[in-house]
Length: 325
Ligand code: 8YV
Image (cartoon, rainbow, N blue to C red):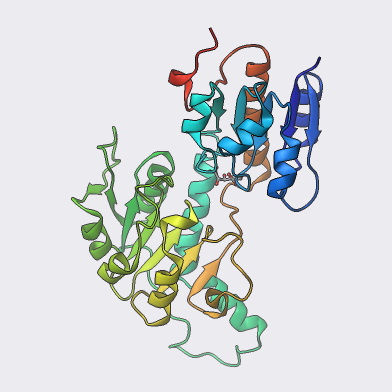
């Protein structure tokens, strides 16, 4: 019997053809993600799940798939939607797509730093609403990027690439990391997150979502930031406490936020953040270029095809816990 592969969202056809050549491939093509009952039904008998951030792949889903399940291949570098421990206990490999989206995501994070500093989205709304009636030298004043300090929370692959862009634009860069990176590119390591928050004009988040980073930026942390500070989040929504951020933007604790990720996601259209001028909201598109999404799709398929051949995925996050004898 051919192996069954479930792809939970529509994907690049040429990559789906590579899967179809090797396995019985089911692609869920509806515009909305599968509901929980649909997912539990769709995974039955699968060898591989091509998963997306919208899928909560926990022990219940793994057990619904049954003993056939050998790999969960995430379309993305972050895999916080997968219970990796539950997968390892069941000898299921978990794959992801590191590296390939680093520069694209860093481009986008730096674009948000610039867009927030210079109030681009707000200025666009100003023109569209017909509010641009005359020249006013004191209208829509932003903050300089050059000469200001960027604080990077998590100087890993993406954080380092953002740092390179910031240094090239004349910013000072400070960072907070659990471990000392091999090359800090000339950035300054600070002793604590609080110190970083107090020193930075712009703060950009680049750490993964883990139990330790969930709610990392809450009321107390926002209060450490200067009043003119800008917060950028392209990592994961739950790292920032949404209610605390909403209050901080409303009462002037900080000046601005640019968020590619939110909690919840999508952010409801009646959420107070949507009516505030000092926040720019994007629909989780930091990696969304044709080239990068194609490469992510290709890597996800490569991870699955390796397992169908009996090998570990080339990018496997739990390889040391897998024993296929
Ligand atoms: C993806 C991401 O868009 O790689 C990640 O961790 O957040 C994004 O690149 C997302 O995972 C889509 O499934």
